[in-house]
Image: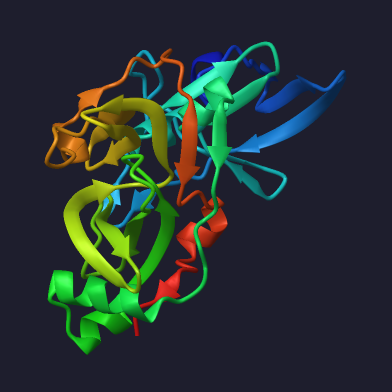
Amino acid sequence: MRFNKDTAKGIVAGTCFTLALMAGVGSVSAGGFTKMLQVTFNDIKINVGDKSLNLVDESGAAIEPFNVDGTTYFPVRAISEALGKKVEWDSETNTVYVDKSQAQKNNDIHVLKPEMVKNADLEKAIMTTLEMDDKDAKETQYYYNHIDLNGDGNEEVFVQLTGPYTSGSGGDTGLLFKQEDHTFKFLQKFTLIRNPIIVSTEQANGWNNLILQVSGGGVASHYVQLKHDGTQYPNPSDAVEMDTNAKIEGTSIINMDDIAYENREGLHLK
């Protein structure tokens, strides 16, 4: 396949990165120096699960991965957007952001990592609420944080559950409990949640608003704000999409690095 400028456009996040090409050999300038690269196309295909991705650039033109010196290069924007992830380019820092979080944009977020101490009483409440048997529980992991959402001095507990019984392509199951001594009173269930969950300083009906990311299942990544109606919060799928430039202040709970989450390094129910 001939390597031309139209093919190269979009290979790196749809930015203005260009390759000067000559007889199948590219000259790439980066970091103040120029290097000649031998580019090879092998009709590389990308599958996610059983779905083959149709990779196109911003104009809709087909693009494909290529190989340079044994390393395969993929089009960041095309792959990310095919997976429902939003891609942003920062020309000032020459940085590509995939699913740049509201916390990254505003930097007014206090971060809480999930609590990693097993809690037998909480586990019992989770299994009872979801009517789980031991088999389901053994395949389920959980992450949680204590935080007072309504300012009454008693902490609620937000739980995120991952596993075949509680998760799908659009996200995981969330549970909200009120802790009273060693017991946990069930308040509500959430579906299709993703971490981190940002507890905003803004409130509705005496409860802090919750901000979550919605993506997957063909939906473009975006953030929504869940406002309490006096009885419960809406599900993320029923919440109002936030302005991408909205300023956020609050606390990010169940905040973990991507590697720990992808490896499902949570607490086992059983």
